[in-house]
Image (cartoon, rainbow, N blue to C red; front, side, top):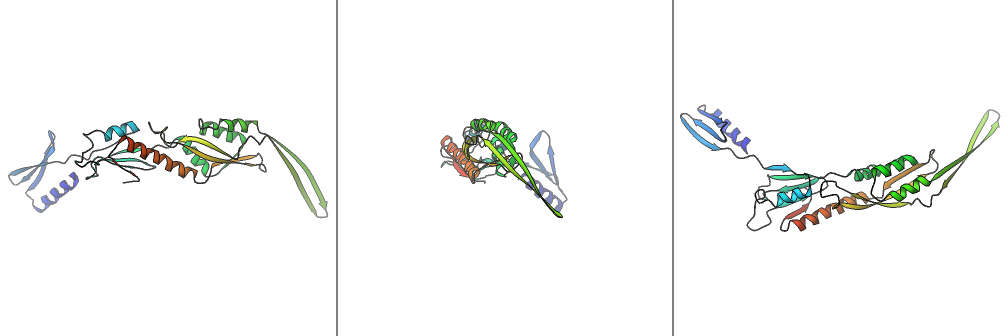
Amino acid sequence: MLAEFVRELVALGRRADSIEIESHESLPEVLFVRKGDRYEEHEVPPTRRTGSVNGYADLIAVMKDDGLVLADPEGGAKEVFHDHSGIVVHLDRLDRRDTFRLALLRSQRFQTLEGLAAGSSMDQQAAIRMLRFGLHGSGVEKLIVALRKVDFTRKSDGRSHLEHGRESLGNSVEAAVQPTSEIPETFMVSVPVYINPGFAELTLVEVWCGISIDLQASPVKFEIRPLADELHSAVLRAQASIGAKLAADLPGTAIFNGRP
């Protein structure tokens, strides 16, 4: 608004050489326009009110501050949008240019699951390290113990067959895995989708994962990944929890799952 105002004045000054714009540091909220020997005062519009917060409690404090959020005589002036990227608060629903934002930070544990969804194989020790450090506290302790107990025994018997001008060589490989009964085909982890203050417990979700063992690889490989649509479903459930919490804490507020 201020930039447009100044551009209009400058354009006007170009059309009429006698017009000049002046300001003074002691009065930053006023512009003085000189037209020949006459001065006019013009109020400089204030800058737009914008800001960002980091946690849920700060967001609620902004929404309940009557000095920040303009009231609507009919109620419902407050407006909030939320999605996987963050939360946007409109301070004046009619104007919609004054906003506060909260960027939602995905937890490292959820990011670990996103990385696993791309699909990758790892050996026994790498799988244990991933579970121990990438998904700690999510309910994988029993799986780690089961993986540590697994013992792989490989036996190779070589045989060859010689003919005139031709040689063939084959190997028979036996792989014994003990015990595999303690390793489940699927398992569930509980992780927070977002880690901002006040959001970890609010967005705690359960995600089903699967595990596959490739006995033909050397060394034996494990593939661990979330089951189909589990991560998308987790995000939807986390967003639903955020929307329900906002509705409970901010009655009368217009709340939308989406982006403005």
